[in-house]
Amino acid sequence: MSTPAIDLRAIYLARQTIAGLARRTPLIHSAYLSEQCQTNVYLKLENLQETGAFKLRGAANRLLNLSPAERQRGVVTVSTGNHGRGVAFVAQKLGMRAVICVPELVLPHKVAAMRKLGAEVVIHGPTQDDAELYALQLAQSDGLTMVSPFDDPYIIAGQGTIGLELLEDLPQIDTVIIPLSGGGLLAGIALALKTARPDLRVIGASQALGPAMHLSLQAGKVVPVIEEKTLADSLMGGIGLENHFTFALCQRFVDEVILLSEAEIGATMAFALRQEHQVVEGGGAVGIGALLHNKVAKLGRNVVVIVSGGNADMPTLMRLTAH
Image (cartoon, rainbow, N blue to C red; front, side):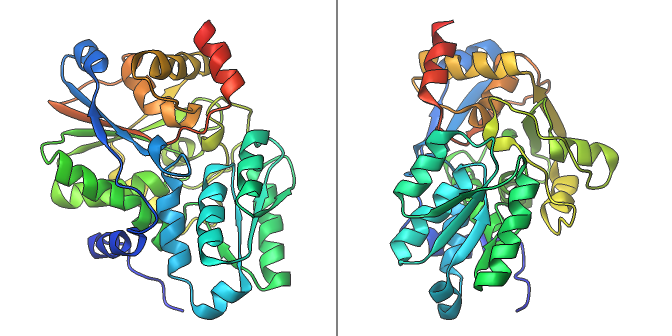
């Protein structure tokens, strides 16, 4: 099977494909952040997707492009929670088998959410790399199709549909701040935006503990990372030593990467709930945190922050908000 192209046409095709499953999410103005940053700041609320995260877009595009034979056999993937939930949701709609391999650090409420959607969840190994190796073994032994959480043209194009919505809702956008982990979200959005606006600034935001893509970009090659427990659990994990797509796309499109400490991420989650009235998980909050903690210069007149997910552990969020 030939590799599909990763271009603007693929993103438009993805939008047609996923229209019945993924929501067009709102773009809202943040009065507080706009005043603090002395510019116009908008939040793209992917935490309002039905599965609570942007990952539904890529999962829907990948699974809906499977052949009939592949659908019949089912899929397997590796996830720290949100991608697995998206795959489980789409697989349930299509009546397919879905096996989700997760590392031991994945939060229990994310495992429960995937199982509630009918997925077979396998907890294996301390890291995402360990879980991925097991998923690949299952793909071979059970004839399942491996669905990458980020390093796949269909996944990237699905996430890129966010970029189309931004161009339609705010064509004057100057800067976009995007949570950065494996790079599928940033690559897709940046491809859409920079095709239309080559001078637009793309800023990645990551946790300071084990920021795999950031360390790889610094090194000029894919490097392994040690996974550490973090409030930004959805950003944990490596980018794959055999990365085929997202690393090169991030090299091409990323203008800057901002790193946030655990204290900054926690404070941002609390801020999002108190000030913006949004439930935002740690990995989804890093873009807001980059502005809240004054880490970005040269913002331009119109700034968009991607709020990528809202599947927060509620006891943790309540504890952070109380403090």
